[in-house]
Length: 394
Image (tube, rainbow, N blue to C red; front, top):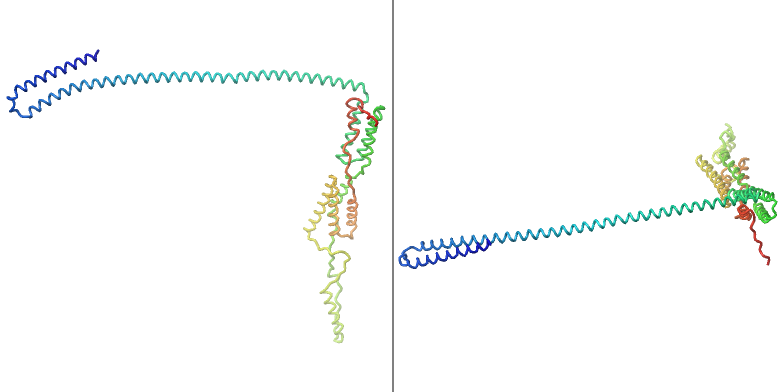
């Protein structure tokens, strides 16, 4: 409605302006002749005044319209921005609700898994307890059965003792390389079986007899005695005399013959002088053995240590049942003693004789891998009797 009033006012102002302009034009036409003498500046001034008035009135109307349009546009922009913000807030709210739902679902899944694991753990614990109870009952039943078997078979402990003796015989044979003691233990085990007075154990005694015969056939090697002999030899190495070159002292040399003062004895004096010169210039000695250069103290120490090392290597080879290295070490030690020590001394001769005797030692490795009586003894101690099946004769 305000806009309509403004338009009516603008039309009235324009009508008034037009009527005034017509009046002015009529006045100008009437007074043309009278005012023809007026200067052009007065006409120009009246026209400019009229145009300024029109411009002011039109400027006021256009400024008002511009402000009105700007206010309307600003209002529309504010409304649009508010609506956009409202939509964004709605979207953010929906997103936050969706995220909260997803978070709740994600938290519920681990809780469900934990509950499932707890149920499985309870089931496993119950099954484990059941298994333990079952094993305990089985063990009690087995213990009762073993006790009953032991009561029914009074010779059970003798069979256990025979089994233990056979096991010790195997340790003596394969670990300690002592066949004589092993055979003695097998004979003791056979005595235990014989004391049971059970004819059904004849196959077991037959297997024991076969084992005793096989062990007794092994040639016994006195490893402990040989090692002790080598130890004694190593301790007395520093006492062996070295082979040295005899140097004749100047005091033992024959004295030079005296010269006579007679001129007539010049030939005899010349002969004596020549002989004395030759005795001092050239010395000839005879040796029945090979000449060995004299060793310095450092070389002597290294020689003794090398011989000791070879004897220790022979001991190690003896424990390892290594016949080749055992003989090689003893042979090299004997060679060095024969070459660098005095062979005329009795101590050196005894050492060489002992090394020759040790070199001929034969180390025999047992060829038996197991005893025939071991599985039978296992059956006897487990079941109380032998479960031997006789093969059908062809």
